[in-house]
Structures are given as C-alpha cells and as structure tokens.
Image (tube, rainbow, N blue to C red; front, side):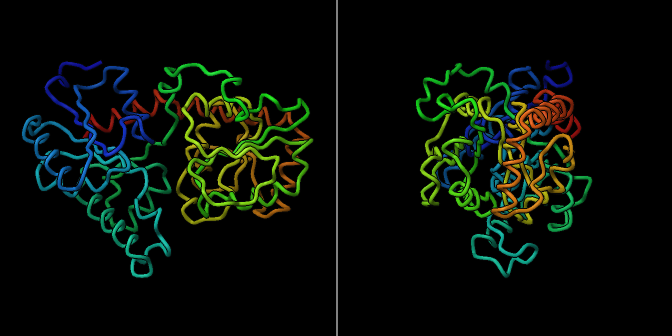
Length: 364
C-alpha cells in the first residue's frame, strides 16, 4: 500500500510497448495490483518526433522534482530525449543492452554492422544518463559495468521472472479449444517435448529440426515447437507440430502444463553466459524439467544436478542421447521440475521480484 511519505511522490512508468510486455510488465503488474506508489503509466507511440512531444507534455504537466521516471524494457532510447527535458531521477529497467541482439564481436563496435553501432551508442548514452539501471543477472551486471564503464553502485540485479498475475487473471482454456496445437491426442507412452522461442542462431532450432528426423517421433515422442513468426523452413519431421501463430498466455500455459521436458537455448553463444531466457522462469513456474547447456547466468540461480537437466554436448548425438535418457527416467525429471519450482517460489516469484523493484524505486 502507498504510505504517507510516498503519496506526494509519483512514479511515472513509460514504455514504447504494452504495459505488461516482457520483464518490466512483471514488476509493473505487481505494483499495480498491490497499490504500490502513486503512479501513472504512459505508452508512447508514433514517430520519434511524436514521442518527444509526448515526453514534453508528460514532463510539463505531471512532474515535481521529487518524482521518478521508470523507463520500461526495452525502451532505452527514451532516456536520450527525457534527460534533455528533465532533471528528475530516471530508473531504466534495461534487463540487457540492446546491442546484445545485434552484436557480431562483443566489445568492438567497429567490427559490427551499422545497426550494432547504433544500438551500442544508445546503450552507452542511456546507461550513463540513468540514475539507476536494473539488469537481469549478476553476469549481466559485470558485463554492463566493464563494457560501458558504468559504476557498480548504479547497477541493480532483478531477475526477470514470470507474469503470474497475467496468467492467473486470464480466462481458463481447455485443451480441446486448442485443436491440434496441444498434447491432447498424445499416446500415454509418448514423451512430451516442448520448445518455445524465436528463431535465431542461439535458439538451436536448426539442431532440433535435424534430430526430429532421427528419433521415433511417431511412436515414442510428441514434439511441439512454438516459434511465433517463424518463416524459415527448417525441415522438421512431419510428426512435429510447429506453431507460428501468437498464443495468449493461457494457451501457452496449457502447452507447458501438458509437456514433460522443455528445451532451453540449444547452442553456445557468448550472450547466453549472462542472459537468462524467459522460458527458464516459465518452466520453473510450471514445474517442468528444463534441458539446457550449462551457463554461468542460469547457474547463478539453479543447480545443474538437481534443478536443471544439463545438455553436456551440443550436437545431434548429444541432444538425442539426453532426450532418450530423460524418456527412460520420467520419474526423475518430474522431481527435477518440482525442484526448479521450489527454487522459483523461494527466490523468483512475482511478489519477491516486485518487492525488490519497489525497494530500488524507494531508494533512488
């Protein structure tokens, strides 16, 4: 609840996306549903010029010097304009640098494309102009500190988590409403595998497509791949269900609930050393065993012997062997999924992460 000392101080949440999008949406929903702070929220749309006009109006009409801006991920560039207009404190929920998505060779902007140089410059300026920066992991904190020369005192770590309130407030959906996009027709003996994520080099979808033609999917396994917007033909086995449509959170949750093994990012990528995929938190929330190569960022939270199934060899043979081992030990992987959920409830639930963000706002 808002206490007396906070009534006169407003927190202005600003985003270029929907208010419940990505990691910032998790924290904002907690604050909104629990009446934390006197706040307003604005979603800015249109051209850069229109965004500047909207920022000018917000700053002119709503702010006193004690109020705080909270820039929601991934809206880093807003800070470049906002700092010109205001001397108020600005908290950036960055999560990660924008340049991570476009980097070719890290820590060397001259080896990258124009888009990388542009995003690196936005990161650099936004980080230095922010009063506080929230990032997704301890490894990410070290990376931002050393790459962009940011003081460690300015950086805070809050894990991404899962938007439980969005899920709990959504309409319940039964498997029959999803038609073929579910495990409802799966034979009881079939081992249910689920992949969710975008198609990019770090996802490992090409590797998954290759092995789908080598294991007995028709009898032993049921694999559903949820890859929104996938346009590339990766030659999955005809027995794989590939979903490219956008699914609502409750529809996606049904696929998690019905699965037995969830795939993480099936590749070696330097960014994965410091980022934690959203689906790791989703798997933990739904108590599902998560198969992933061991990374330093995941290892900050989860134990790779009892809470995550480690993919020790990122290859066709390595992945096939691990899947087969999991199928033969279904009871054990269920225990691992439950262990992951226990860790989630101890450290990563929406209430705990939301409270941590509230602490950062209060201390800004």
